[in-house]
Length: 64
Image (cartoon, rainbow, N blue to C red; front, side):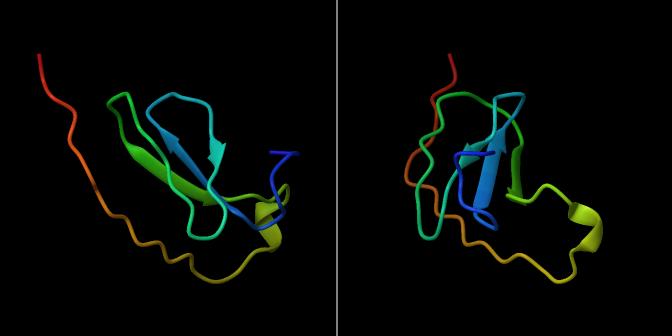
């Protein structure tokens, strides 16, 4: 994402567009889907290491 800092945490839920989380940010989720995390980088082939993220759920979507 060009508007997001290089190396920042990215998140995406389901088929939604990815969003920039940054350090200790939050993500308000309004749809169901798999949570995907990544790093903002244009060349993933030269990367090495791990990404650690802590996820805290503060609410649950109600099923209709």
